[in-house]
Length: 307
Image 1 (tube, rainbow, N blue to C red):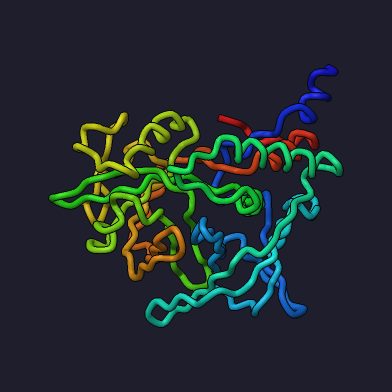
Image 2: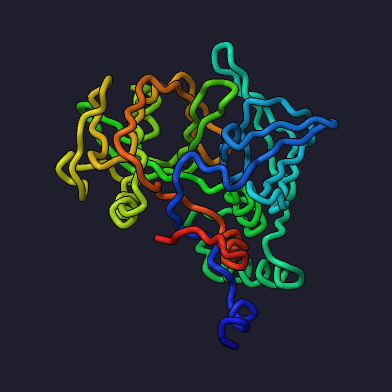
């Protein structure tokens, strides 16, 4: 028992927890606040870039809004991101707004454990940082973890052309509800970015939590294309309209017609419209959330199922 009590003071919490959640999640509600106004943006905000850390939303909330994350059951404030307007993104008749994350704080851990855990995590990040690899600053990672208080679904993105085929995991994704658009923020160095900008069609497979190992195995395909559609560690099926191979065991397969793309910091932001949506089966989907969020839920007896 005493080891469980003292452990958080000796080593940091995991930055991320991989959990099983029924989509769409409403256990955490995101609210954008500005000028005495507020709006629910749980399904209308997403991460658009990691370096710098940028949030995209359909709402123009002025120069310096605040993004609050609250427990959906109790209303307790879990975390806050303080934003600064960066630039608009215009796609046809739809305009989105990008915001720099200027500061952030969470309330999932009590004081002084919150500050101590942050120091331990930051020290570990700096210790393990390699100058040859892409890595945001520790302060930005702490802010990113606050954005993940809303558990983020993991999908597999499929792209297929005669000269290029690929399937890879993403979680910087999501609907921008008021605009009717769906966003994907893919690191600009990913091998499939030029092809996606050209063909403007992808299939999105919502993945059961039980397929975590197979999904993570495909992360290498951000750097190298798939050799063939017999290579994935699971059967595939063709998407309904585009005929793109997708995951046969997916909970849901959506097809995205990409209407706009542009480089935004370290990532390329793809915006599209869903042209088909096949809901194949019920189940919990693979999600990522912040480790301190899972610690908060564990302390209150509402922990998420980890996978």
